[in-house]
Structure formats: structure tokens, C-alpha cells
Amino acid sequence: MMSKVLFSMVILLSSVRHTGGDQVTCVFSEDCIVPCRFQPGSDEVIHWVKLEDQDLPVHSYYYNTDHLEQQNQSYKQRTALFNAQISKGNASLLLRDVTIQDKGRYKCYSSTMNGNKESFIDIALNAPVRWLDIQLSDDKSMVTCSSTNIYPEPKLTWSSKPPFDFYPGNINISTNIKGLYNIISSKQLIKNQTNICTVSSGTINKTASLRLEAPVNSSSSSLVTILCRVPHFDLMTFDLTWMFNHTVPILTSTYTNSTPQMHVEYRWKKNVQGVSESRSLQLQRLTKDHQGTYSCKISTARETHLVLTSLDFTSDAAAVKSSPSPVAAAVAPSPSAVAAAVVFIYCKYNFSPY
Image (cartoon, rainbow, N blue to C red):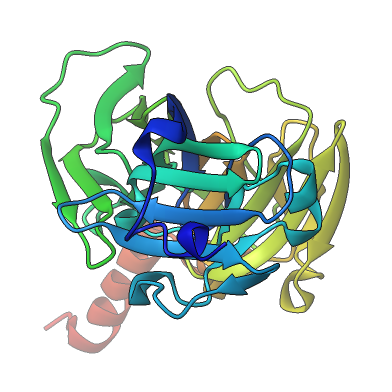
């Protein structure tokens, strides 16, 4: 039995059966199962090792219990075997909270009274594009698209609807402290078009679009409708968010099979009349404090669409002030009447027959 336990010192290589070539893809920061099986037998010994210039002990099991005294520090409290299934020939490794350093080639060594086996498994890493942010600059001339914590190295492309020839903009890719990739790109906004950004990594991609609508003019007595037009959007399940000046929430609505569950923020309840079937926002009882930028954001698992509209407010009082008063117009003297009065006064006090 001791010859099995101290396998790193004494191994009868001629009796070891080799298998290899398997690959498993693990997701960054999630748990991952690395499979390994062997012919069941008594006196099981299992050793997991990461193969590098200097092999790293990952997990060991013998004498019917785990032995982690020699485990590499980077794997502390992150590994486990399925102990209840070892007697059935399952030597699979549970690797928790996967990091970028975990990718590479591993060896699973198993031994029983029936023989020895070595299996080789390559761990590939994937950190998919989980979100995509698209923003308009303060001067409304540039649009920026960005995402973070991606692996393998991502790609970013710009497009528009309808199609339009434009300079694609600079793309900057960097690595962060986690060893993952960040990506960002800015380009000139195409007005009256839907500006579309797509970021892809491996087989996963996400898309974000931004459209700047023409300003809407309103007054406090008007019912205002702010449109939310997005390209070729026919999904039945999505999230809808309306914001004021980019940071103030107005309402959120979750659509499941086209049925919405809407929540309106308390301070906006008297102003929101509703949301149309086309997702347009209907407002009422507005004041000059409601002048600003309204943003409609539609999100799905793979798409984000942002529509921005400026509301220019003209109050009823301002409109009245700019118009002549009907009473004043009725009593105001005409120019000819003013001229006649001036002539009369002059003649009365200045005309003399002598």
C-alpha cells in the first residue's frame, strides 16, 4: 500500500495505463468538474497534478480520506473529490472559483489492486461577455462602447442601421489584474441612425445599440409621448427601463411572453400615464423641471438597445406672456387716435389769432 501512496517516488511505469487528449472548458469564477474515471477496485489512490515545468500537487486521496498536506497554495480550499463515488470508479475533481491560472494540462493518476491508470485533461478557460455598455458623450458627438473581464481576447465591431460608411474608431484592448481582457472603443455618432456595437469572444457575442432621436417640444398642458424605437425588435421576453437625465429612474418593466410587470417610481407616479405597446413613454402634468434627456433601455440576454430623446419644455405661462393681452388690445388706442390727440393739444395751447 505504501508504494501506492508515495507514487511520486516509486511508480512501476510498465503497469500504468495511459489515456489522454480530453479537454474541458471552465468558466471564470465559477465551479468546474474535471472528469476522470478508473476501473473500480480496493485500496484506491488518487492524485491530481497540474503539469508545468515543476508539477503542482492539486489534490490527493488515499487511506480512504483526502490528503492535502502537499497541495499547492493556489488550490487551497478550492478542490474536492466526490468521495461517495470513488468506490464506483469516479475520480473527478471539483475545482471551485476558477481563475485564469487554472487553465493548462492536468494529470489524474488512479491506482487500485486491479492496476494503475493515468489520464490527461486540458482545462480551457472562458470568461464570456456578460454585459456591454454603450454611452453618448456630453456634447452628443461621440458614442462609446465597452466591456470588461473577458477571455479569450475579444473583438469589437461597429455597424449602423440603415448601413452607412463611417470611420470605425479606435479600439483599445488591455488586461486587468485578474488576467482578463477589457475592451473599449469610441467613434463619431451617426445622427438619425442606429449605432451598433458588437463584442465577441469565442462563440459568444453581445450587441448594444444607441439612437439619438430628434428633440420633443412640450408644454405643461400637453400629453407627451416619447418614442422607443429599436431595430428589428420582436422578442417577447425582455427588460425595459426608462431613465431621466441618465441617472434618475422613472420606471422598470419586465416582459414575459409579451406580458409586462411594471413598477413606476413614486415621484413619477403623477406624471406617467403609461407605456404603449411600442414601449413609448406617455407623460402628463409636466413642469419645467421635467426638461432634460429621457432614455429608453431594452435588455435581453444578448442585446442592449438605448434610445435617447431630449424634451424641451415651454410652459403655458411663457406662451401667455409672449402673446398680447386681449384686454390690453381692446383698450389700447390706435396710432391715428394718438396722432389726433397730439394735434388737438398743440392747437389748444399754442394757436393764437393775433
